[in-house]
Image 1 (cartoon, rainbow, N blue to C red):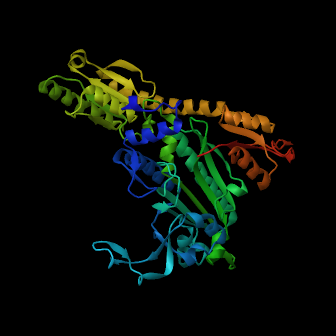
Image 2: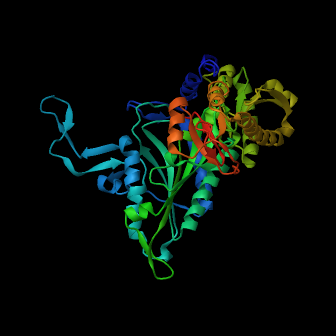
Image 3: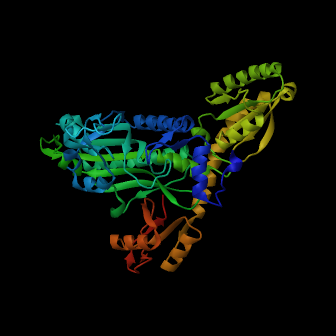
Amino acid sequence: MSKNLTSRAEDYSKWYNELVVKADLAENSAVRGCMVIKPYGYAIWEKMQAELDRMFKDTGHQNAYFPLFVPKSLFEAEEKNAEGFAKECAVVTHYRLQNDPDNDGKLRVDPEAKLEEELVVRPTSEAIIWNTYKGWIQSYRDLPILINQWANVVRWEMRTRLFLRTAEFLWQEGHTAHATKKEALTEAELMNNVYADFAENFMAIPVIKGVKTESERFAGAVETFCIEALMQDGKALQAGTSHFLGQNFAKAFDVKFTNNEGQLDYVWATSWGVSTRLMGALIMTHSDDKGLVLPPNLAPSQVVIVPIYKTDEQLEIITNKANDIIKALKAIGVSCKFDSRTTHRPGAKFAQHELQGVPLRIAIGPKDLENGTIELARRDTLTKEIVDMSDLVDKVNGLLKSIQEELFTKALNFRDSHITEVDDFETFKKVLDTKTGFISAHWDGTTETELKIKELTKATIRCIPSDSKSIEGKCVYTGKTSSRRVLFAKAY
């Protein structure tokens, strides 16, 4: 199992691909560019969904569902959005198949079944949702509308990688409508903060909050707020985005309302989303050469119990004790699994749970029962200790909290040690090629310079940090005046 993993130092990309498959998270499908998320991988995604869904509802949002298909005329109504996604769209042109008269037993598209208007398979749902909101909104009394959708989207990708970039992926997308610009901006920032809270407190991933440059914004947005994370290979990963859309979509779909002064105005909008790309972030932030390392707050099973026995009688006694432990742990909210499979030896079970990143492993044998002890192993540090049965529940509870905190601290220390201030372009390139990570550098504020740096180094401006201070300096590339530093990095 883990012994067959390529090491991160040898080939990080290969390590990632092998780990996703060998840990039973996902695999490539028969459909080019698409993936099958396997039960263990989906169980982690479900934990993410559950926590995010709770956080959305705690901030006043409701779930709804909108069609997968978007008529082309609606999709192209907001021109910048349509232009931004046009090259990634899958399009439905016909509605029926028929037997192929020239190829017995095969099917073909019925040439007589051409749709009157093509349907775009949603790459994002602004168009269909804002067309719907037009019928929902007449007065300020109808606002705000705070809707979230859990769905799949399709963005036609030629170069794919499991979880990080696939033609079809799962996500949530929030779409809200407001009476004022201030309310919409507050909403967009609120949801970016929700994403940061989730990333740090559940995924144990430190993130930098900021805004995107004009060229990196969501197509059709006035402002894009984001959270950026740093992976172990020194590349950045955009972990979530929240967009202030201004009145662009309201104007495109003629969504007006009568305000409390009796005047007709366009509503103000936001949209925000995270996807199964977060699975890739989780894997690449914490895992090691032995396999997954999962933060306890998102592990499908926080504890696994492996019995060590020779006879059926011993297994029965151990099983009874394991059931008592599971009941006690469940009572304090800890998820626990008893691996009673008779088809696998203990060593194989240890290897599998290590590969799949279960935070804590308990091993119980006949001697442990005699001594009133158990062996407790941590996945993150690979350390073991002998614990008295009477102290087990408190010990497990404390260790799970420690693991969660220590994973975050480890990732934070790595991230902070890989933020490098640079003032000249030669050093900029050298740091990118050797140390990697985020580069904090002055930028003259022009898209032209931003694109030139990307062309020469493949590094992009990940964000303008929210906490960045106004400090005069000179652009790292052009030498022109700059008022603040921004963060560059190579990215996924």
